[in-house]
Image 1 (tube, rainbow, N blue to C red):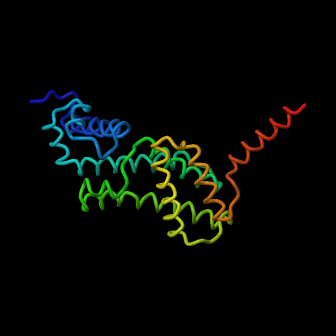
Image 2: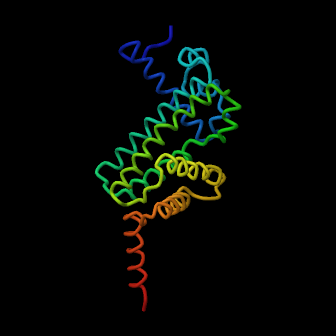
Image 3: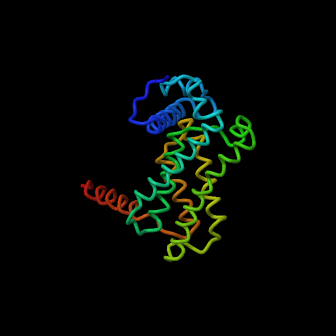
Length: 219
């Protein structure tokens, strides 16, 4: 029997499952989701391939579990970071930044390639994980419209457009053609202009500091 390092079998299984998902996260940073294998995941997690299949019957099930955890992590990070932040423009800016950081942290192939690799059913279940992101973005847009910060554009359609712009930055970021910071500035500025909004307060403050510094440097 395998050695049990936790006080109970249930706790041991939970720890092992967490190690497996951590292994997936590490591998996606260097190889991408489409290229990792069950053998690599098992080796990185410190278990046998047979043991891995006791937790996840195939790669699709493993990636679905990973997507569940990544989505939950994003939602928690977003709500924690924006706790008490009232400005709609700052909320929108933070949403874009966190999405772009997630792209850089966990690279994955284009949707069509991932679907071809996993099959249509598994891909559709993975695609369903985008829904909470869209709902969260719609919440940001509704709040901004209610507060008068954004114009009254159709919320659902606008959210889809913003997510598409974020997704379009995936390849340039992964190729090193742009940085997360540059992509964030581009997507945020374009979106806020489309919504008839001013730049986020944090951006205006930084700009003011830079301008003051430039004035102070003049002879």
